[in-house]
Length: 504
Ligand code: ZN
Image (cartoon, rainbow, N blue to C red; front, side, top):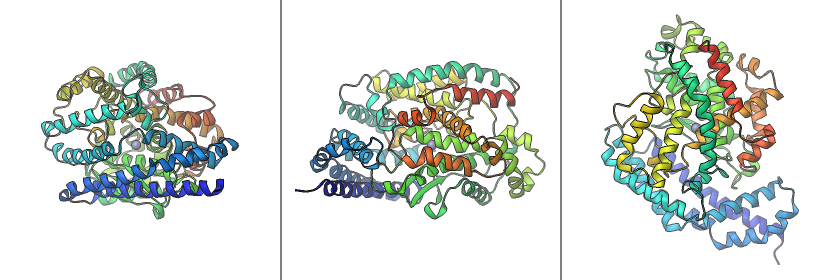
């Protein structure tokens, strides 16, 4: 007779091995995206595939299912939010999904994704959509097959959305997006009918090392712990976690665009603060990460936008930035700089878009994903469909596919479906969480104005970060705000900030 404690320990040991293998995969991916020479691509694809397959086999082994069954009575005897009950509940949810995906399919998908990612890094600078098209067709086919391992869905994108934003369906996302669109389109029109703010002060020459040093100083003030993290350069910035003690960010610097590197640094640091803040006792379990792509993005957008593009933030940091770049910024007043970092314009690049137009970029991608999955849009017609959508929603068309459908890594390194909605859900939730933080600590804006972030960071740690995956996004929202997803705080924030900037 094994006791409950022994069974629980056996489950934890098994989950720790799986978590460690997944971290090995993450290291391989991080290396591929930072330092690996192009010649390593083929072997790296195989290596990531084999590690992913072993992790998947170990996790979906019937022994895991047996332990979860044997622990069901124990789980039911515990409070819902106890650590053990949450561990068993979340592990079971993951297990029930994992066993539906054949291991051979998954390893083929990992391998295909690595090949596709490498091809994208070479085809994008060459504006060579023809080269990635067959790979993308295969990705679409594999994404559909992935969804079909979860029969009974209302929309074929539902299972793929559920991987990233558990509990959300295409219909829910479409509803939120429709409400948002209704509020955003008139705001975008009112602002873009005016002359855009002059942001030429950001487009001078800003040497890379000084940009990196300034960004590092700021995120250290936020609370990003460099003893448990590091920052390296990449094509498409991301955050990755190998363990509680090793949460890394990557950045891309453009010497002719100060905003690009700085705001991608504060964005990724927001993801990293979340991961560094998860309860360390969750290490080696499925609870040891952010709860959904939307909640994750709410944290990156909090630090990128609500903090780093705010007036109080620059009241404190602008003199230091001027000291770092005296010849570029000494003669630029704070007001002009603040308007420059909040310029609103109809633009082509999602990651560089302002807060007001950003969600239109996301909605375009989300609708294109759904149309491809529904079989209403062929990959071959994607470039034209992309340009048509930009023309309709933003009134501009990219001169090539580089800044068109080859712009984002997502479809070239993962599924088509489920990849984009989290960005906009995150924006919406960022304002909901921030309002809750302000209600608890009205001193937050004045602290930010002194370059201090303790009250905000501690509140986020206690109310969001420490829980990891213990609560779903919806449970977390209800706990923190007392209600569900609500666009009102976000729209209020945008109207307040940009109404003042553009005298609406
Ligand atoms: Zn992000």
